[in-house]
Length: 432
Image 1: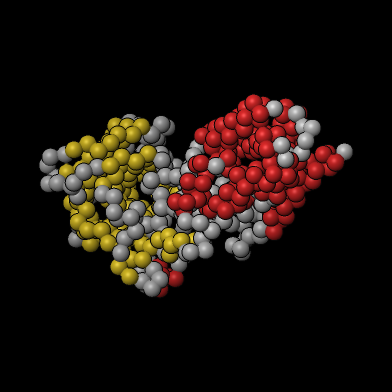
Image 2 (image 1 turned 60 degrees about the vertical axis):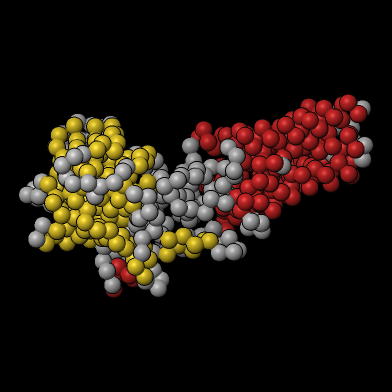
């Protein structure tokens, strides 16, 4: 009976603290907060015209400058972007292919929000459409062209939009306590030799623009055409979703460390057999995490809180994976108890090996490098199964364990935990 009470307590702590966290989150947007696009970030200023089933646009990018606030100073963040783009209309999230100059990473050909190809030297840029195929090329003189990349945009309409764009993601600063600060930035691209130049052009934002004080009172995002020179200013980003400002599954797992300690202490008690213990811990984790994720996300959606889009497959992986990690941790504790022949010592070692590294790395208490190595070398690596964030080279973010980024993939972390449990169980059987 005591074991059932302990298991139920562990589950209720995970569920209770998770739902308390969800109910405590309220929208600060004066209404529903904007829902993140499932496709990725898609915000830029667009100076564009129609493009039929075949055709091209050629430009020379004469300069790229920018501003970082506050206080305002000239500068470009590494992934500020300005260049040319073919897009399925002006709806955020629609398919695109773009050739651009970036703040610190040279010329890039990007498409599909995740695909990124590096280019070479040359400030002449060209995009060519042939049906659903878009080819990006660059040149140093406008005569000799080098292909940077090719993309197939399935379902691109007969009349797409092509034109010039500018965008610039926020400048991220991570303080010593792990708090993230993002400053507004703006990029400005100046183009000439735009070919063709005679078609009717339209100027408008993709996504929300000109909402900040800097844009309202100092320099609005937009496009200006004068004497064959076009200047485009914009802010935002085109690319993978950075997940900044959204809640994830891990945000609801506040009770997981407490439940883990209960299971480690319970698992170290004598008279447990390994398989019944593993099943009991797995079932407890499955119910606790499953209810917390399902109910917690429902509450967050009801409160209009932005949450990370989660596919059914990823959600199932997180729920089942955490249940497996809790089961392996309990088995590890029982193995340590048998190996040391002292249940209290086994539970202490288990907590030190599993729970302490997990807690130290969940908070910004250690240098990022130290935290990453702890999550590679200790059994706490197994809790990488709850990671739903993806690290992208072309997105600046706080890729630290305290921000939800584990150094190992979910299967790699689980393998480390399983290896610890297997070795300890083997040693306990040899000693017995």
